[in-house]
Length: 214
Image: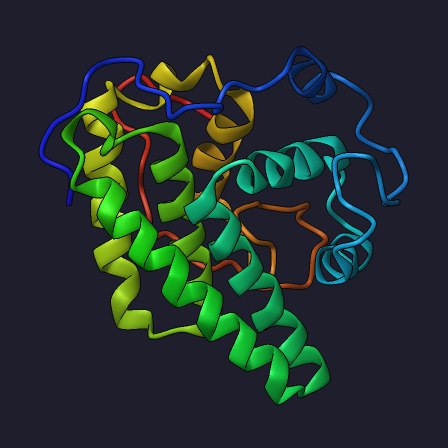
């Protein structure tokens, strides 16, 4: 668990481009189709994007978030672990399960090493990685481990000054707000009430404190 951090920390390259930030304000009903943010050569990510819950309307947010995850080593491996894990469950493919475990191990090791660097421990990239660990553990791992990751995430957020301190990175802030109400098989996101996937943490996860609101 991180010991301290400076305010407004960001890992190298973690800034969201103006195009991605603008996309948050764009229409939410754009078709769920491949975009330049998602490499056409990465079949497993294409699989995930094209099969993502049809009830989820913030397509631009989803694609911008995945683009941010792919920019950083630990989140990239943990994203791939999640997607391979999901495809393994849906298609009963043992090779995908092997890939999921491999990426999970790599991402977790990279994150652990990054957490030992005091001035980067609570960086945007590390917080993104912990969010992905929470999602993976809740959907595919041991439920008993979820509490460990959520406690670590709360500590990291507190070190940064609360959820409101992430306004510079709207894609990450959106996920931090959404994780409390996230649904199974939705990565780090929530969904419409009409979604048939169960809530991951019904009344059991609280990151917002004080005057912070989603």
